[in-house]
Length: 463
Image (cartoon, rainbow, N blue to C red):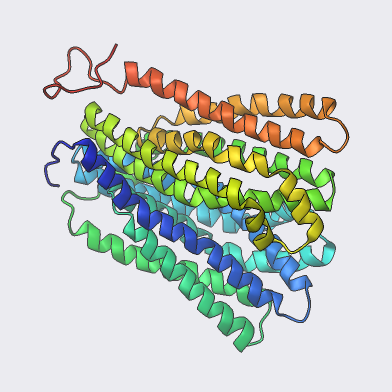
């Protein structure tokens, strides 16, 4: 691995942007696939297929999102190994992450029946839609090993500061999926089973492509795979610790989102639909903010591996600059064009009017949530995962009481404002906790100690 040279603030900004733009572009392709799935199934003669596929797809969005730690944990540890210039460590992290991903995927298939039954029961769809979703899910679960292995591959490449692989793999996955959707459903007359098989084949196609890219990259790395690192359970200690905390943190996020959805549903279908439309505003801003957060993961991990705390500060400031500019742009766009965006997302007059009532919450949300996106990236790169986990549960400890108190005192018709206040509070507290952890660690851990050799005129000395 080549010797790594010192970086300036300008270099850090270029690196963040170079890493971020392929991720942002690949994120934009994700809703395209959902639109095609909806359009293909939505043109079938019976609407129950659309309901069933939507239910099944929602189940797998939650299920696979829960294992997103396989991407995040691999990125943080790999980027630090790159910073230490340890090719053998980079190799063996790939092997461990792939074996872990394939093992979890196999277990998901093995226990698919109770998982699918429980998941669909929790989603509480109609009997007809649930039956179609169950058929869809029994096919879709076969892709679990490929999906989770792809997470590990994407995390491994991002840890080496190669984000273009993310774009290439997602573009291939979505292209194959869309083509097979049209072939199976429109050409061959299949229904929800055709959509499921199209996704499974696309996921395994992406996995084969990813392995080919991995083999090419391995030829550029020195070192070798070590049998004891791959086959001894004790050798997985750091990976298990990082991933376990990320998994618990993700469960907390899932609970926060599920609670928000359920409390909206209690208020009726119109409020539920309006909240769903407004959550798309958050999703839109997250496409760009995620890109800069992922770029921060790889860049921060590299500086931590090198123990170059001056460069660490450059990387954080560069990611913060792009993130804040994006959040400010999103808030301004929602303030000026929010009603037009709502009109694009729904044609129902009552849903449009209801969503417009809560639009000010959307203007505030990017300016608050930006800090949690940014510092999630920083803490993943530094593998300070316990702090991320703690931030979620501290935020939940404020989220639920604020909702209860605000709902109790809210006048009739303002219950959904109370819900949005609680959700915004969750974001405020989560961001504040992460900022607090960051400043503490920056003064005590992520800094040059008095007995540590530092570059001339280096910033970031411990206090």
